[in-house]
Length: 249
Image (tube, rainbow, N blue to C red):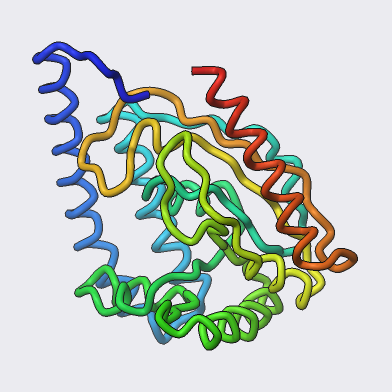
């Protein structure tokens, strides 16, 4: 949790540890990303394995260097059938951690991210659903069409229903695109709550020590419910968990 009052020496230590982590992440990206790009002719599984090594290394760096770890409650709620993950979005951390908590998955992201040198090119090999947010109707159609294809391929699909990162203690509007996708595909929706923003906030350089709490909720049968009800149930569960995690500070 981010401390409100820290001594100069403690803050300096956090800055130095965060700098070491940043350097490690940058160097590991320069090593793994070209390998992923070179592995484009091979199967998705090969590229996923390479990306997962990068993810595991950076989570290890967070734990060892920044002293930032995480605990997961509810792993037993993850069904064998691929589904849609509706996850709270507070920081960049969950984009890493979801990849080791769940089976192989894909993200919905902005098209422009794939144009970033090295990292974006590597990300493009992992079958993301890259949308143009300026064209909402076309973007929704793309999420539904490509999302169903990914699910049929055995991949999970991550949706951040609030659309953007939301600060701890805040709540955004929950969109229904993830629930619509799950309903169309006849697959489960799995809600996920966490408090990563307390330790690694939006677009922040500093990573504070502590243990992030992640909670995976019971799967929601989207095949038998309409999208509005699925979204409402996921929202109620996620926000209730956020309140509990907050009280545990």
